[in-house]
Length: 525
Image (tube, rainbow, N blue to C red; front, side, top):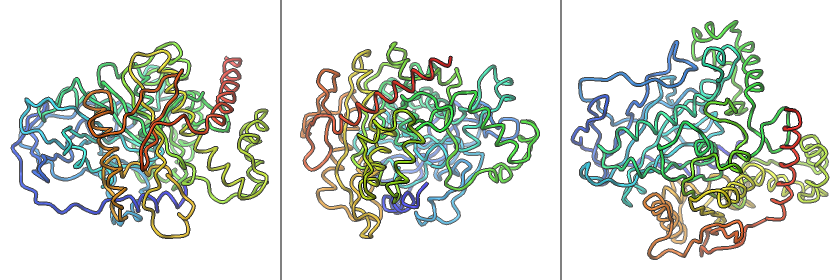
């Protein structure tokens, strides 16, 4: 992961909110009373347990119910983040960022004054490549969204080797599947919301899940999972989508794993940390497990386990096998700026040939690399489109063909207020830059009046969508629903307006590439 990620998140980070906090009246959940604090006209609860600590024998198992308690639980502090190497925290100015395996907690911001208000609910799923991330990152503070009349919930989930570790012994132990514990944590959080959110003034029938990057990919996965029926009524995916086939080796533009590949990776990881068995690894300390993780290397990803994730979502959507709810999905104009470092033309072309095989010449025709500047631009665009723009486009096309839930697609192209350093000189709307507008949290950067106006507009679209399944509302530019026969997306900028799908010629080339990869995978089965 590039250093730019740390710098960008630092630019987006919200400074600590200093506000008067007074204890709130306790609320009864199914496991006990919780007491939050009154902040900024809201009631805020931080660190509510939604599952038992996944420690000891519960390591690498599906989340279990939390133990009930009898006293009032004070919920005024964020719980530790799930185990990870917190590489972005120093850039946020956070010293001693706590991490723990005991991390399955959620947070609630509610404007409701009584349980009878039945407000729409927005459940946030953080990103971080399935390797890092936490609900306590202040960019994700739900205050401003909640002030617009929704209950905001943020849910923690296991990441890295604790959240996405598959192994043949685990597969045998768990009835034929392993590896997607982080996704099961998200589902457990949604189950908690369904059982308990009414006590906080929320409506369990109007739950919208929303997430960005790995969180947005998670939203896409949850929409296709058989385990989520009835847990949410709408979905928002920012720079997410999971429609490529599973990779077998190092295929370009593919991240998903088959269970068999994930198990092989798990066997290698177990050997790396010096464990002879899963039982042995469950007895190891968290630090011993984390010694097998290289900082910034990623290496954690969900797999098609046949339980949480049934298989290639492209095929599932073609057959209508998904949770057919309204969706609001999109990507940013310059996503790849965060990931594609300076690259020479020869190296770029070689990497395309290595990853895209027989299709490489067609990829290079669409994303040329004749000179070093052209190669850098193409590397950024290719990453943008394979990781984010193509999955979004395909999701929109498939659901608009086969589903009833309306599809609203955005293209975020507004350049945010970056730090005034050479690194950001040629950056546009890069990966993650829309989040400060969604949450209206600008942190250390100084937003212009235009930034503030766009943030109010975007957050209003998101809240309207959560309330009704449609982002449109009074005072907002009209956002047309996407249709395969009329492919319009909302360009979120100054001004915001509907446009045709950007870069569609490149996306069509990638569509041919993924069809070729899919046919290759199917011919081997």
